[in-house]
Length: 244
Image 1 (cartoon, rainbow, N blue to C red):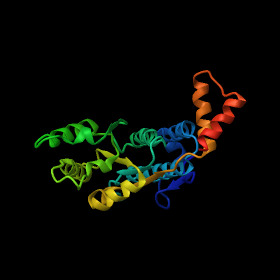
Image 2 (cartoon, rainbow, N blue to C red; image 1 turned 120 degrees about the vertical axis):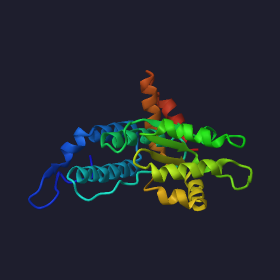
Image 3 (tube, rainbow, N blue to C red; image 1 turned 180 degrees about the vertical axis):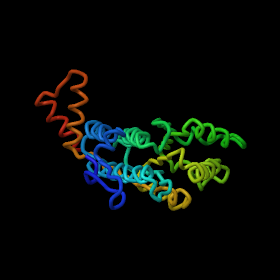
Image 4 (cartoon, one colour; image 1 turned 90 degrees about the vertical axis):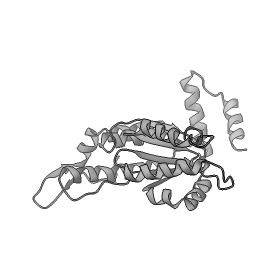
């Protein structure tokens, strides 16, 4: 469910928009339902995604109504431990952005430092630009983004990739959404040392670790997909294992 009223009117006596209908037509409702089914728990994440989707839906309606608006900054930061659903949410977020018309394609190009940074002079710029070319019109997901910045190595070429990314994030933000992902504390340090990134990120989503009960549900769902189920003894053993 979106965090929006049922309908909104642009101005007194002007056009009225049915927000629920607009959301369904854009595919947002179905995408959010899909996300709800795919991810166990993660209530704060799902809530934040709904909020972002609602804000963008209103922005889309304002644009269609000819009201004053400026292209929203859509770059995001996903922080949390591995296995908490960051990639899955990135895929669904791309679908939402595409449905609302904020990106031309609903694709997600997922990369790490090795895909962007070269090993010798003159190697980084072509690699980074090639990835950006592939991602244009969609979402670029950079996992463990803090590895782009290695201040302890003065001969590192990561800074060159950072400068190219920052330029594209600013100048071509209407055709590319960048999602930076990684561990929370390391991402905080990364933003502190790279204020250019911090100033370009509009939405931050923190992915909490799963609770023990949620891990048990996930395990049972995975087993069910493969035609298995836990016996009482196996369930007890697994509960003890995840409690360690």
